[in-house]
Image 1 (cartoon, rainbow, N blue to C red):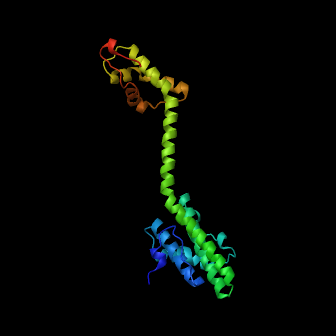
Image 2: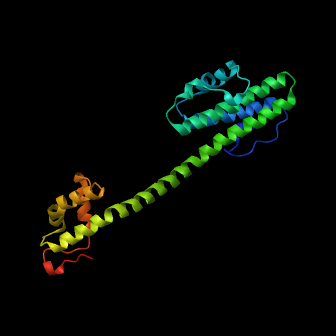
Image 3: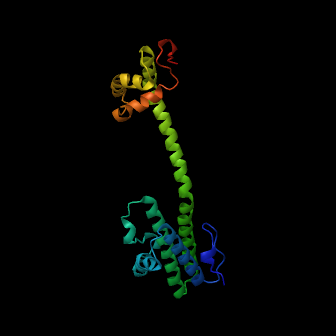
Length: 220
């Protein structure tokens, strides 16, 4: 028989299980699969020792409050979200088994529903995070572009005016000649143009201008 937990795609609903035990097994296997995917260096033994054992030894009456110490101080926020949801899914599955053993079937199925929710939450974040990261990155690039245009456009205009007013042989010669003036102006305006990048930046701002013959120079 094909193992549902291993063939099921992330985010795909579980089938209807005939028993709490079968549902718990599928949830724990799905949680382990996600645990391994986000931590390829880990093993089944790590999952047992770092997730299942602390949960089994926990006396918490509310699975949502269970803390797995191995991950409590991890620095990557998204990783903590994954692991917390994985642990809570397994904790609810454990509580479902406990309820089943004590013939509290209705409560057991309620725990299964909560376990499904936590696992689905972890899988949803896992699938969406790359897309969200791409969107955020694009928004940051766009914001930086707008900020740079607003901040540096006056300096760019000044650079072209200074270059047009001089008799320079090349863009590089012009950029070197007006660099100190542009850097000083950037500090006044708060743009703080880097000295290391000033020559390259100013040379780029002079794109489209002609040099070596004064009459051919344009400041537009």
